[in-house]
Length: 336
Image 1 (cartoon, rainbow, N blue to C red):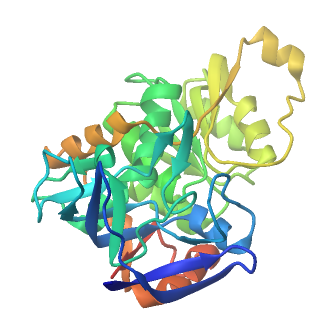
Image 2: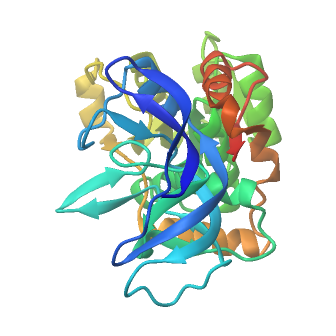
Image 3: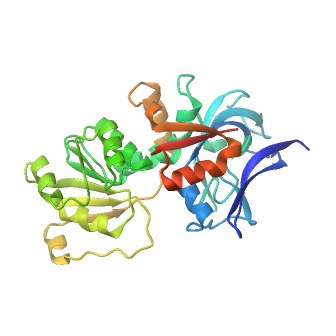
């Protein structure tokens, strides 16, 4: 039996360690992928710190990693349309029995030398897109892309605000600029995050603690307010603040997750202005394919999204750096 290295999380103790495990063998409809790059996400941090628990995991250990790119290694029985050596990125999850199972959460992911994947979750990559950049497209880029183009339905020249300029929020800024939103206003209490938002294309970056924030938003939008606001922070105060600067019939899209109650303090105003609050989660298969195509065509550039690349053995270090924001990372990449 062939072996490989994998960064495994022991759920009862929340212990992450790199171990020697059996290399998976692809079954019918499956493909074994040699991992070239795997992203490190805040969801991985939350799995390690215990604030996130898998819903459908069988057993008490899982190989982390839902942002994965690599090359096809071995085809399982009945798989056609793929060839060994072909460059691919993997969808962050798949539907099983009517439920969404997330890679690296509900089943083994890509913080390993090899990853097993259903053939239907593979997306072909052009030779021009580096694996490090391709790996982060599922989730880090596809989640805000789906929120912007789907749930939020942002149209050209609409005024939009982004609360939280971390990995997903910074990409939201970039994507909003790509679809023609104007102005794009980023809001974050951290100076480094505001600087990153401007670097990614924000027209204005504001401190959420600024008592004149409302006046600045109204000034930037000709007094109209925001037609759409995106909460990537998952914090109740953010939602209150965003609602306070929405234009009539404006919508607030909740992307950041929170277990805190969702409240609307001024419900009469909310109804009078016909505001809407929309929940958003993840992305669909076609969103990843769209982003790969846009990157291939030069419409999107993810080179500034990769802050650092670390060896697989430093998975725990990568998690700590994401948690503490050491080096102000957008995304860290593990490379086996």
